[in-house]
Image (cartoon, rainbow, N blue to C red; front, side):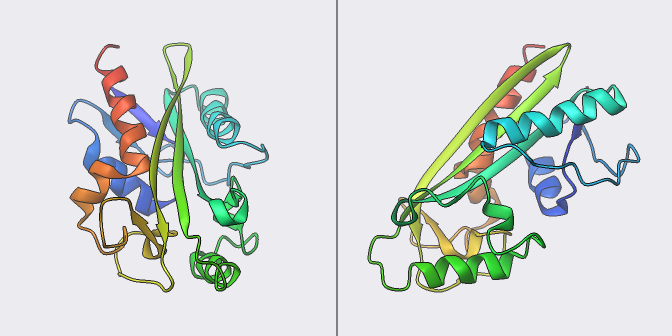
Length: 191
């Protein structure tokens, strides 16, 4: 089965590509000639994921899936949430995003947070959503060189290393995206 992943994020493509079974051929936006940035104008992760998947289905007529992920920090009332990618500005700069979070939490001992990923799948005229959540806490400084986004400042519950310090195989097993993707893969096995 051919399936377009509606993202321009090469890190996400790589991460997801490692998890998909061999019978699913992952197709990038570049592969289908989609260079435009698909706008994320909705106010929920679910709606943004669906918006991106619908865009590919409508404009390219291909089965697709898209995700949207948010970091939800208790002490910041769930922020950055749906605005995680552009928390420090429209340029989507991960370093600036992390610095903003660390700065906002500098006087807080409450570090509890969660990552939530929602995947929207459009296949065989069906529109489905799959969700993955991982609980954890925010560090006081960046740690680790792997991963992307907020990975250097997020420690999943039960671990003492950030996502950026953990081996990719472990991160993929326990992460929000990994959990949502496992649900997607389980569904696709029935199609």
